[in-house]
Length: 184
Image (cartoon, rainbow, N blue to C red; front, top):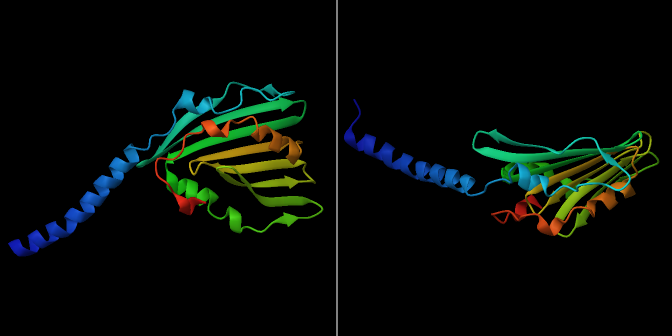
């Protein structure tokens, strides 16, 4: 049997941990992700010259105490395809940080077959790449320290994907609830 002093010291050592856990859970609840209709509104309704393959697909994913929402939209024209994925990581900032954290430090590659480089836009950081052999392009963009935007193109030039970014009104993207400079 343990002494009352030992039991009380164990209890006192657990109390700060429980307060921290409680504060973390409250903080996570205060950072809701955009729900289906809200995140769908951030996607472009159309891309000139391309047809939407279907209505945008949205979902909310929960992993333990973390959650994020996702919107997906695809467009095509003949054999040319564009796929857009938009993630809201407001309640999973660690996932945002892991996805975007190393982009700036990655080397720029420009060869006869591949282009891969860091890009910056207002409130955005990202990477763009183009594979000349496969004629595929991709832009990965972290928006407002919260959203992760992917534009992927098959038989699409990188310049075309860049022009599609202008279809997103980035000023309407909600900011993160917590300033997170480490994610840049």
